[in-house]
Image 1 (cartoon, rainbow, N blue to C red):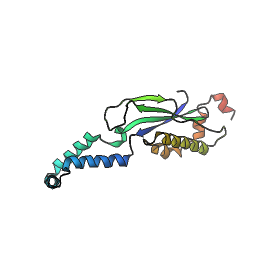
Image 2: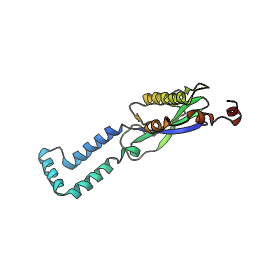
Image 3: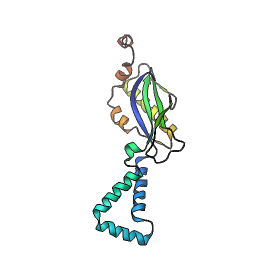
Image 4: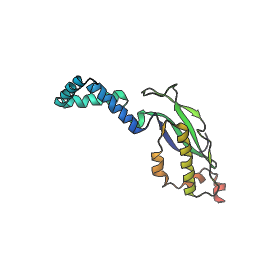
Length: 178
């Protein structure tokens, strides 16, 4: 897609806290069992063998899926300016059902996830930033129950000169007439 690309926002199968809570339950269930008598015995074993406990936790966490940050992504929204619009392309895994997995291929799905947001011609950097955030919120609503992570964009977005960035995609002759 032509235009000025400025961010890829990851889409996760579920939020970070929910993933880690589920992973902790998985590790607990496989290390200690749900049978109370056996559970006490396993806890005592791991209390005596700390190295074995550490290596078992590590193995089970990897088996479950590893760290959330990169392993639970199911797609991306690629944000870009196209003229006076904020747009986002949708890239998603090609699966029939979103489940915990380590094998995935992310493919292009759509030129826009939600309708574009128009930026007024003389908008300030602050107004452009608000339009970007408006687009991200609309995309987040469209993707529910998936989790769209815009934390990195939000951390740097307030420091970006959005007016200059938007103007940089225009031909030099149009920029000089401003």
